[in-house]
Image (cartoon, rainbow, N blue to C red; front, side, top):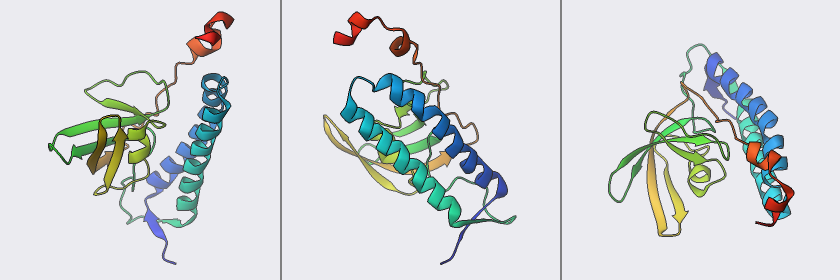
Length: 170
């Protein structure tokens, strides 16, 4: 089997990214989903599958000096430029952790657990993805992916950690 070539910087970035996701997922799962076991299990499965796919990719990659220094697919924290295939609108979307603060600079934030985030994740430029919305299916083409300013977002868990017990019934 032919190995995928990655630059040293990109290999390191992806390896560090896996470690960062592993650190961040536990507080998110415990804080946000402690009230709903089914959501917690689905979210935990999502994070496990996501990091497993990245680890498998890195195991089948080789670091080469002449390799392209670009992320081969979208990851949490990347900025993905997409085109709506119905109206050709171009959108710049950052895939973030759940309940992350809002991005700046005209970016649209999509949680990695949202239909948009999940459709975009781990797909390369040129991919056509379909996002299920209440209004129906929307198809997007991934134009480009940038990890130059990789930011997975910092989840604001303070409300969930500090909420009064009476709020649990809401």
